[in-house]
Image 1: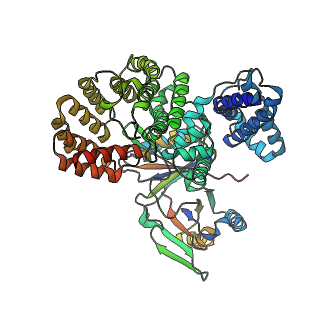
Image 2 (image 1 turned 30 degrees about the vertical axis):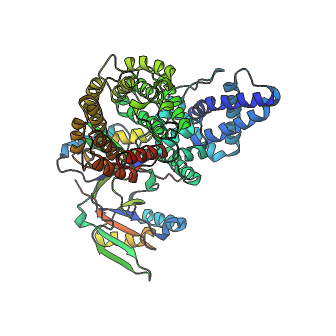
Image 3 (image 1 turned 90 degrees about the horizontal axis):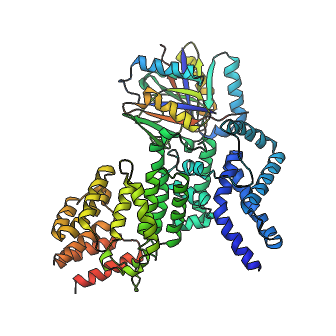
Length: 106
Length: 407
Length: 108
């Protein structure tokens, strides 16, 4: 089962060593599928297609307090295991949170 | 002698700064680097030119100096150079850099980059003024009436997005132009309107700002001679700016069109703008800037052809509907059919949310009520307008009108 | 340059065929890096570590966004214009949906 871990970082965002350790551990455990860090939200651009017209605007389309900072996709047997990995992720520490979403299987 | 050299050095910099920066961005693909070495080259010129004389080709001198500085910098900073080398591969793929003595004009790319829809709308005019018109950050801050630090932060943030999100330095393909050109025109026009009807402050027209916008519109028109809306924008600005001297009276108050001293209109600007209107409206369906230019041209004629102006507002309303256009049309109708007809149209706009907070709506109502001999209501409208007005000359005009109807 | 395309509020009006075609076009163009559709938000779970070091698990999405993230793509393209071109071609950009394009941090 594939899960996406959406990272809304708190105080641990800049703890580079912790992120390196975590990245290493998901890869060594063989559960890592993919993952990326995102640049800050000011660099975001929104695209909508209205009929034939393309509307490109500056910034995210909806202001939310918590900003997605990155993600991991992990392949693990069940939700419990996914939750364990989420708790080990530095993004869930120090006021941050990690949201777990199941990937759809087609 | 030194003074002469300094003056001509300043003039050259104003003209060459944007060109130089654009050519360097094209060469190195990096706005920050281009900005730094442009400044360094100009500083070097300030040292060498007064002593050695202005070189035969100042632009080429500046470009050569700036390129050397850039290469020096890249040699010193290897990681930076590695990143740029990657960028350079892409730049080279899109065409070889041309540099044969004269400075190539690469500014069109920057017009499109700075007006990119992924940048905040408020920053587009500021970027254009800073890097294409060559104003200092302090001058741009003054243009938008914000503290220098605020403007510096906005420019840094916008530049960061250009670099991190990689907004390209390129001219859109012809099929993309209809979507992208209006943004560029809007950025220039926003500079002009900020200068023209200064939203706050002691002057009605901030000539320096309006003239920078005109200079930018001329450059854009030269770079895109076949784009009728770019022509229309230049014409609109020329034909509006031609009346600048007559718009303020000896007391510093606003003077309405019908009371203006026509001998103070700038005939040369009108003569330059009028043929451009014809070009803008020939060879295809009209665009909003072309139509507005035609309206401005009719305002520059004596007597004013109000029926024709009303029909042009009808066209404009179909091209770019907005309550501000409706308001202007209502005023033109009042001039054509009398104040009563205009007032009925204005009253139909009451409660329009996009007019809320603008002094022009109550000011126009007050004027028509005054003409209809309804002084009490006119006074109420003028008082409402006075609450909202920002510029000093317009405030004076409204105070004079209020005094007139409460006498 | 890698970009993440976040698919928000994708409409049910988009057919599986449209999604399949889009997915294929990304792969055919050689820009596809990764991508997944996500299960419905009611299935999501939030995790955080409390001040005393405890793992806290709660139901539901953490950020209350009006439009919910429905999936994503990672693409590798030269610049933002190319990224927004691909975003505009995605079924998620139509019928009232929005695509947010975010540059990815490259650690080299």
